[in-house]
Image (cartoon, rainbow, N blue to C red; front, side, top):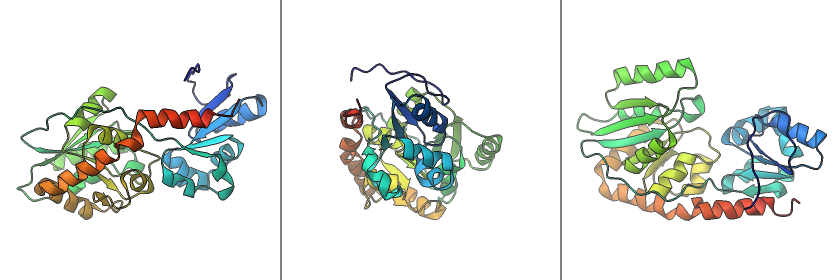
Length: 285
């Protein structure tokens, strides 16, 4: 769009016409210093899932960021309802986009189910592996998990799951290009999070035409549709196992999931994201 952008770590805000703060709580010091020390700087705060569904309810610095911002950015249409009515006029929806990806041939020897998530509690990252344990011996489901461990405890849990669950393989952190190839190759992508602002992996799965199973949380309902047939209650291992079994055994069900994901592509297109960002910046000068 013709602007000169640069990235800095959270802390005292450097000189700029606009501060685009990612995360209300973690960037709270940047927002505060921009408003107090550089009153000419316009402030935009982009809200993550942990902002919307946890931090703004319990953390005073996160709430202060919302009050100080000139604009608030959320990643899906349903997020505005989580904010106080007085803040809603400042809200702009900017979808998390992904460019179209070519679908790759799936593995023939297994029904590969992919999880792309760092190992942290909000992602409930081992839920898919636990659901796969519920499947019968005839199932060819194999859960491949890409994502770094953000604590020693969760690393140990993933390693223990691999030892007792022959259907589960944890790859650890992988580069973005490899994660996208895994998404394009998988039979299914599972998103089991408790809270998400928008979920980049969902945008990438939609862009690749890879069917998705996801926890029934606001972001998934907003992007995939409240009646999307691949949603399950958060944390419900048996419900997820039933969906995995159905997706593996029922080709029509799997095709319907794929069709619905492809239909969601316009919501996560790069052109739509760019137009939305242009709208956020309009009128700030």
